[in-house]
Image (cartoon, rainbow, N blue to C red; front, side, top):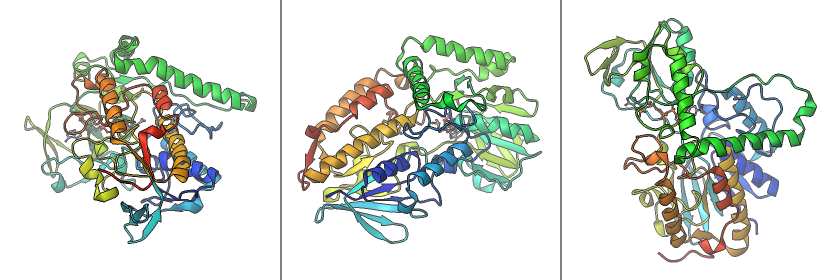
Length: 482
Ligand code: NAP
């Protein structure tokens, strides 16, 4: 009998899963805690929010569109794309919005998952697929005095659209990709902007541009496929080697240096913006307008560490206080906590948060021993630094669909600890050769410094290993054992 599936989350991952299930005629429900689809593209509405991957690759392979207005789409367009996908593929009817899943527990008596929601409902499903993203829970730092700030303070992913920043004194804390996108926009209207940088990032130019109207024949399916493939191969062949000390590392580093030299004439400012670690170790910022924004007369780059927030502004370690009426926390996300705060309990009472105490890990980033019929999308070690995450999500969804076919005939499937061990060994070996292991600190790592976010090989390699489940890696039937 076809299994029933609970999908948690309606972002890029959850929607992709839902579309495939819908097409295959499988019974499923998508639980989404927010009031709409889109995940990170629904939450991040800060000015300038956009993607760093070209639109034809940062979209589903089966739903290519001709009407992207830019090469690098902006947030409203990506959100509209996902909304349209939900409509077009008939997912809406299976969508439970404003319904937060608080726990999922495998019940061995019936071999099914009990999925509970914040509203107190309980539902039974054969399979649970999580698509909650790695970057869905904002991280707010714990800086002394934050609560006593007299102005308005908000996180970049919880933008306060009610606050007009025109003429204001704005402090932006953090200089990652979110900050690099919002700073140029805010600087244009603010009276003054202080950007508090703890660690400089490498920046590469963004070959963005409007796509304009082209003759429809140019968008024949074959042309679209070629265009997508060409970008994909460029990212695999030219950008990926940067992360494994390959042939393009020096060339790409030079490109970043050139941009800095060209856009920041002041040697002092340039020195403070020059990273002291190899390119790619932390997320590369892709932007044409970030450095120019820092050279504006109304913008100051502050590199002195923050000591505390005062009611009237931000005090740095040297005792200086810079006044501010608005603080924007562009301080990132709780990326290494993965499925938290959902309580996931596998067979025999095994809890996922316990299993992951030392290290968050999953076989292929998808399956966890002792958690039968649980599949993760964008799980541990499946993030990329060089290519479209949609490629990874589609590989995972295809893999899960094949697992569903297996478990429908053979009973609940659970990855063997031996398969997990072999996976971990191969992962660690590949990781050892990456730039992320060269000593810098980033959100790719957990507290112990282990890289739990990223996949250490190419996207093509990941697609290969997830092409089909190896039945030998799993046990089937009523779960038993340690
Ligand atoms: P992020 O890269 O994690 O950056 C957080 C920033 O906040 C860092 O500069 C960090 O400094 C700083 N910070 C954190 N706590 C601090 C503290 N207590 N005091 C001072 N500074 C502090 O976050 P993000 O910019 O939101 O980006 C997260 C990820 O989202 C990106 O890597 C990317 O994958 C994705 N993203 C993508 C795009 C895009 O496609 N264009 C845009 C936005 C986000 P340190 O660096 O010193 O820790």
